[in-house]
Length: 298
Image 1 (cartoon, rainbow, N blue to C red):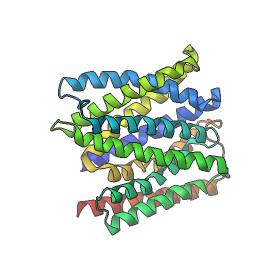
Image 2: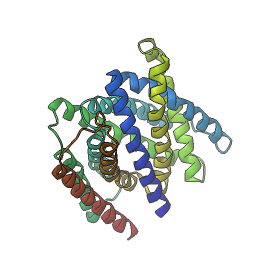
Image 3: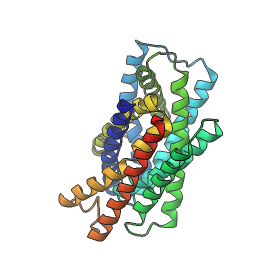
Image 4: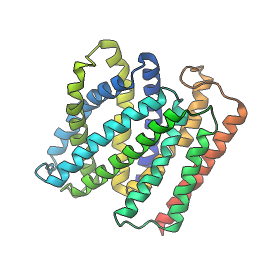
């Protein structure tokens, strides 16, 4: 279990860093869809490598209709979620946007219940506290426009659906090791995502500078997914998402660091009072994570 927790927290750190690069890219080029397309092609390289490596250890059940439907859902849901989130961070600093994705926990818990998986009262309490902390992050900054709220809710919903598809795909993998199963799912998923994004290059052709600027985001995000899938395999998708919600805490610390470094275009200056409020919400999130861990140990 503790290996899964460590993998989830490391994933949270890497994905928080990736969001900083994605916001910088969107603010520089002004086109969230371009970043979504190009980043899938960048990560597709890693996907192909993972897929080829995984085939040495186990087959991928591409002849199973249910697996293919889950793969199609994973690809479609992720593209919608990622593009929606890039639209959000065009208007919202990375630290707040990253924290607000903690709302995904409620959706994942509801999906788990609908699929007949038990969620204890203590786990529900942890999920609610984590959600309150995520929303509290939003009120520790400027006004969030209704348009941004719409795209945020869309990204939360489709990220949750994407995670659920991935969890089911991992259970269908034939390998005995959850590690190799997760790497196989990553390989086939990101190869498929790259192929799905390829037709869009007619509108967003390869240009050297934008592609090079996409690589930092793609590298950090793809690496975070490797650890996230390992986390899901070891402790489950809902518990794993609670651990990944630790990016709210990480984002606060990262935001302070960016301010110290003078990166004001990525993280705008806010008052000490608002940073204290963000810190309190971060502590609430840590409490929620501790509660969920205790509930899972029973």
